[in-house]
Amino acid sequence: MNETDIQTIEVALGARRYAVYIGRGLLGDHARWRAHLRGRHALVVSNTTVAPLYLDRVAQGLEGLRWSHFLLEDGEAHKTFGNVGRALEALAALGATRDACVIALGGGVVGDLAGFAAACWMRGIDFIQMPTTLLAMVDSSVGGKTGVNLPAGKNLAGAFHQPRAVVADIGTLATLPDREYRAGLAEVVKGAAIGDAGFFAWLEANADALAGRHDATLVEAIARKVRYKAGVVARDETEQGERALLNLGHTFGHALETAGQYTALLHGEAVAIGMLLAARLSERLGMSDAADTARLRRLLERLGLPVALPGDSDAQRLLALMRLDKKNTAGTLRLILWRGIGRAEIVGGVAENTVLATLDDAARHR
Image (cartoon, rainbow, N blue to C red; front, top):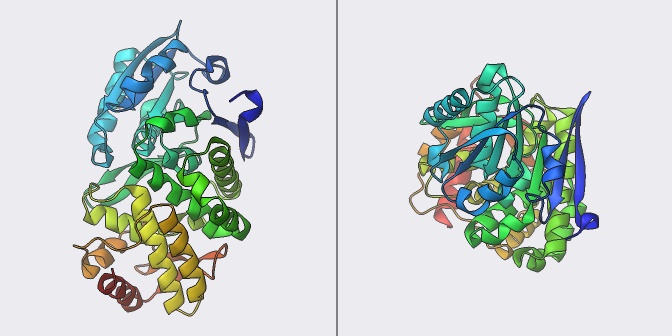
C-alpha cells in the first residue's frame, strides 16, 4: 500500500484528539508514529506470540530512546492484576518519567493491560496502541477502555485512558490464525448491527471478500467501523449513555467467556453468539422481527462465526454471571437489544425469566 491507501480517522474528545491510522506497512513507518512519543522512555508491552514477529520492526523506530519490553503469555487468561504489577515493575526498572510512553503491540489483551498499566503509572502516562489482531483494530484499540479480568467476571477492574495514537497495520493480519481473524469480523458486524443498516448491507455484499482478507475491502471495513465508534466515543466517552450500545451481545458474550474460564471461546466468538441471543431476546419481547434475526445469523455464518451455545452451557449459570454485568443498575438486568438491523437501544428492567427462557431455547436448538 502507498500513502493514498492509508486511512486516517480522528477521534475527537473535546480539546483532546488522536489519530487512528489504518493501512499496510505502518509499523515500519517510524516517522509517522514516533512523532507521538513525547519523552525519552518507552516500554513495549507485547506477548510471546507477537513479539518474535514484530518487535524488531517497532524497535527500529525507538532508536535513540531508552526503552525495554515486557512480554505476556498469549491468551485472555493472562489479563490479570499480577501482570499489571509486572508491567509497572518494568516501568520502574526503566526509570520511566511522566513523559514516558507505553506501546501496546498485540491484540486486545495486550492493549487492555498495557493501557491500564499506563493509566496507573504516575497516575497516567501516554500510550500508543499498535493492534495486531482484527478484533483489536476495529474495537478495543479505539475508545480508551483499559482493564483486567477477575475470577468473578471479565473487565471488572479498569480505567478510561485514551491512547496518543492507534497504528493499525493490516500487514500483521497475515500471521493471524483464521479463527482469530473471523473473531474480529464479529465486532465489524456488531458496529453495523447497532447503528448502520447500510453498512450491514455492505457487509452482506462483501462477505466473501472480507472472509478472504482482500486488502481494500478490509481497510474499508475497519475504517467504517472505527469511524462509527469514534463518533459514539466522542459523544459519550465514559459510557454514561450511548456508548453502552457498543456492548450489543456483550452481556451474553462475557458470561459465556467467564463460564468457559476465558479459554473455550474467543471474545469475538462469544460476541457473535451473544448478538444472536440479544436478537432472539428482542424478538421474544416483541421489539424486532424474525427476519432481522435470520439476516444476522446468515451473515455471521458466512463469515465463519459460531452462532450456537457451547454444548456444556448451563442457562442458570449464564444468568448468574450476567447479573454481574457493569451495565446493570439497582439489581436489575440492563441489556443492549434492538428493533432490527441498525436500531439498537438500551433496555432496563429486563425480566430474568424472559432471559432464562431465551437461553433455554437456544440450548435446546444448538
